[in-house]
Structure formats: C-alpha cells, structure tokens
Image 1 (cartoon, chains in turn green, purple):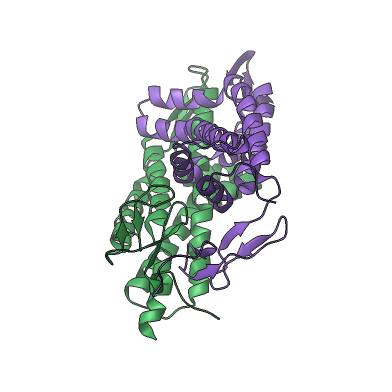
Image 2 (spheres, each protein chain N blue to C red; image 1 turned 90 degrees about the vertical axis):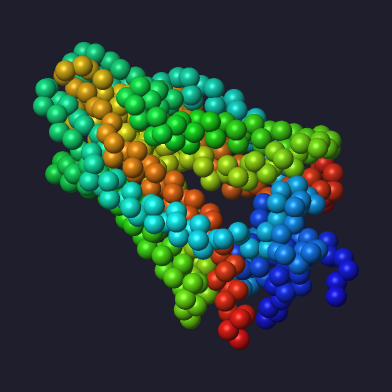
Length: 208
Length: 210
C-alpha cells in the first residue's frame, strides 16, 4: 500500500476545505488557503496541549455537573432537587426503563466514555504507545460522532421549565448543575475538534 | 521535487495519506484505504437537491418555531411551549449560558445552516459566482456539528415520558412541522458532499459535471 502523506511531499491540507497547497517557507503554516482563504496548518497548532486543557477542565466540571441539582420539581408544595442520577433513578422507579436507559447513556455514559477515549488518545500519542492506528482513528471518529447527543438533558430541562409552570401546584425550576453539565458537553466537543487525528499516524513514521 | 499539485490529488483528513481522486458510481462513497475515513461521495444533481432541501427547510422553519410543539393539561389549565420559549425561561431564571447554548443549538445554528446552504447552492445552481461563496461554505463547515435538531427531537420524547405521570401531554401542530424540518435538515447534511461543492466553487461552474 502506498504510504506517502501530504506532509512527506511538503503539502498542507486545508482543514476547512481540503485543498492542498505547498508549504512554501517550510514552517507548517500558510496564511491563506488558495480556495477558501482560511489559515492553513500542516498540523493543528498545539493540538495536544489544547486538547489536554479542554479535557481536564471538562473532567473537573463533570463533578459539579453530577452533584449539583439540574432542576427542582415542585409538585403540590413539596419540591425535590434532582441531579442527573436521581432523575434516572426516579424514571426507573416509575418503570420507564427505555427512557431511563436513553438518559443514562446520553448523560452519564457518553460523556464519561468520551473523556476516557480522549485520554487514551492523548496518552498514546504523547508517550508513543504502540496501538492499532486504525482502531484509534475509529475511536476518535466515534467520539466526534456521539458527543452532540449529550445535549439531550439540556433540551429536556428547557422543555420542562417552559411547560410546567402552574405556580404552587406544579412548577419546575432549572438548577446550577445544568450549567456545569452544558459546559462539560461543549468542552468535550471542543476537545474532540482540537485533537488532530493525523498525530496518531505521524508517530508511526518516526518509529520506522 | 514537485512543481505543481495535480488537480485530482487529495489528502485524507484523519491520516494525511495522499490519494488520487477516482471515479465513484452514483451514490457511491470513497473511503480512505488506510484509516477508512469517508473522503467524498458522488451524488447525482447534488446541488439541485441541496437547494430544494434548503428551501423546504426554510419554509418549515417558520411554523416549527412559531407554533407550539406541546401542550400540557393539568387540573383544567393548559400551557403550551414553543422551541425558543424554553431558552427564554432558562434566561429569566438566570442560567444565561445554558439558555444561550440551548437557543443556539436548537434555533440559531439550524437557521444559519439553512440560509448558508440556500446561498451557496442557489448561486451554484444559477451558475453564478460570488466572492462570498468560500466564506459562506467555510462558516457552514465550522457551525455544522453545533446544530442539534435530532437531539432536540429525542428530548421531546423524553420530556413527554417524564410528564406522563403528572399531567396529560398533547403534541401540537408545531411538532409535526418540527419533525419535517428535522428530516429535511438531516437529509441536507448527509447528502451534502463538501468536496464536490468546494470543487464547484473553485472552478466557478454551476451545474454539477456529468
């Protein structure tokens, strides 16, 4: 199989439009893409450092996101603050297993697995672990693909606070956990964007 | 050493492998042989389809956002909500950042995506070029993954189940428009071949090459 990369021939691929251009001054950077006029980088700038910082921030915020209440349901005077997990447990008690499973996957499992996957990718590139490159690229694409689904709970909260507004009889108010959780989703999505998957394959060349 | 880059060369987004573009059958998709990343796909009348979907999407966008999606009945009282209303309530409760996030992902970005695609595919369909085309396509690329209508749809279903025990929930006309909008935007995103659109912008040719 032919394994010439664009970089081997001194070519930069525009990350926005895919256009190839010469890296004229051999610094891995071109001011303007000839097609879309965006900046061109041989590899994303400080990809590892940026992804690390976004990932660590997300991991820290993951704690308040799960401890603080995301909303408070007041029903006939008695109000109970709900965290993500307690909301899932309530759904289980009511017998809504499919919905409980959906929320568990979208709000707990996906953010957690995403952070673990990014951690493995970062560590493996940083310390040049010998792992299957194709598998790691697949993992990266999975992280990119599923990230958005964690926004599910944010939309549910937005719908519930707007719908359930009956004063003292029934009332739902959002909580600070929602902000923390929203930040986790956004930060992990940004971390997936700043990670340059080509770094996985670059390593292989220097090792040969 | 190379002096010019052959026009049919491309590099894989995820592994930087240098490849030559080959002809794919209609509906076919080219994958990177090394990392299996989808490189490009060939769609017949891609621009025409994108234009049609963008117009349909914009038409559906208005009722989907202005009409209530759900009503809730509890002890004889009825409340209803539209898509943007949830963000407004969150904003009033002081969760500005969350409100902004929900509003962007469910209203602003889907609208921007439709408008940008109307502009790009409209110009390409008419065979006209504009210096703004590369910018429009670039912004589309950057905001693409932040429009989350399909996630919103699932959250409507979850909200219905959560409220089931408390009150009766009635789907409203806005919800049907929203489902239509969701189908149209999902089709538009999945049928769009970025590589082909960029090539057409570059060569200034309107209709897709035979």
